[in-house]
Length: 176
Image (cartoon, rainbow, N blue to C red):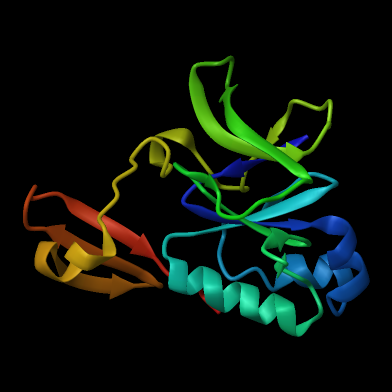
């Protein structure tokens, strides 16, 4: 099976969650910091829009004994960028772009290495037309202040005006 890769995805193996996270899978699921969680029976994914949120989330997981990197290689946790792919070497996943909904749309996805399953698990309320995949827009961190104006923040989502294009952009923040 496979899980969606969108934005900056934190992939965590289910087996170490069950062994190390207090309360196991149910507690991990219930503590998800946003609505992007999806999982098959081998790996889970939670997506973020910024690297600082990813670092905070991984730091929290490491407090419970889950391991991100050992000698520069992903152990229990892997970070995958929607465009660039895995952010560190990892010998337990494979990733790429696959078709969903009768192959009309392609999304980034990853699965445990050598898995034969092809179904892609998506967050519960995820819809392609509203997704980062369909509406992807990247602004380098060093140009944010000169390019964006914060309009408002509501329910953990920052709404910005892109002064170069006139577009309205959204940046979601974790709730925890």
